[in-house]
Length: 460
Ligand code: 2HG
Ligand code: ZN
Image (cartoon, rainbow, N blue to C red; front, side, top):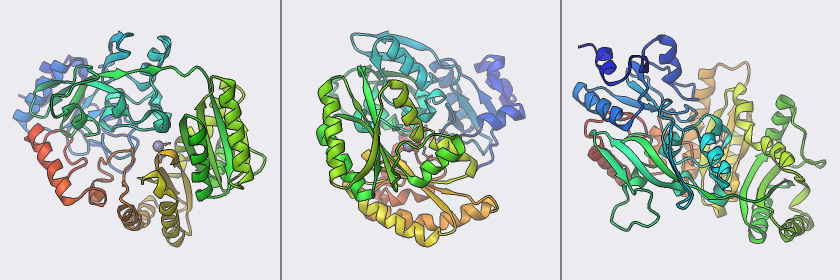
């Protein structure tokens, strides 16, 4: 029987698509490097339908690619080899909210913002946040262990997952950890599926933990003289306050936000770098402490100017200077890097990367920004308008090896938060030893014996 007919036996007719527009749309994520070429798109509504699909795919040797909000930056959700794309858009039900457990159980196609809003309506807080929260889905967040802008205060997605329902590549349904806080009964398989990019199986439901909502928060943007000063400023503020975020961007990044978005420059005095920090501001002592620390940083010569939000509205406006960078510069087809080292190694790391970049990319504009408070740097190289995209990518990828060698020397990561997908797969050995990669392959073989779950992603 024809594959499409078989799929229509598992799913409703309108939940199987193979028109060329859908194949193009659902066969890719935000990366533009691979040409999508899936066989069909299916829209499951339940865990059982996904189980039936996985069994069918095993029988017919068909490969499956999961597709959430398609906001990924590493090609983890690209289907370029006649795979069946499993789009979670119709698995968007919130199944249970529990105010005592402070948890929400939902299907994995629930949009991040939907979860954040539900928490807020219940006077609670889902703290994992990033610019794409309006379209990214919980299942995708978990599968990439998404980080974002509040990691300093609240950690990664992994910290907020209390339970998972998954369908393994062997077609079994596993219910992992059942929402428990404590569970010392051996291997925690839940954590294997977090960050696995769909290579072991697909997450169909998740129980997410919620936090106490901050009563009030303030944002500061500080003009900082150099990278070592940036790290001193971080240390000073971290010792004085509970920070929920500590981000940075370079003056060139700010320039683009100003010219292309029309965003006002935050301070009168300009500087090579800007720190954006956020802290809970629910009493006057905290605000006084923040101002005192700001003055101390000025006295030390680390900071030359600064601004503190006086309202939530102003805080949001300041946040846009950082949060909207990625979308704003996408017009320049940037070559992206998502690197991390331990926080204390950030100055050495940035020095070394700067040397490589200055030597090799003198003709290109390089933007620095990222989550410096957790050691994560986003290095974006802009394509000159008159350069062919192929030539540009080729030039950038040559230097990749040098940047990754430095990252490896400092025991850093070549993908801090965007995942490995297709784009970083061939560089994995810069962050993982051959022994580790062998264990990773062995784990994959246990959960996905026929190699049908998101093949070619993360592992070769
Ligand atoms: C961010 O932090 C995202 O804005 C995107 O992770 C990073 O554009 C990038 O390279
Ligand atoms: Zn980021």
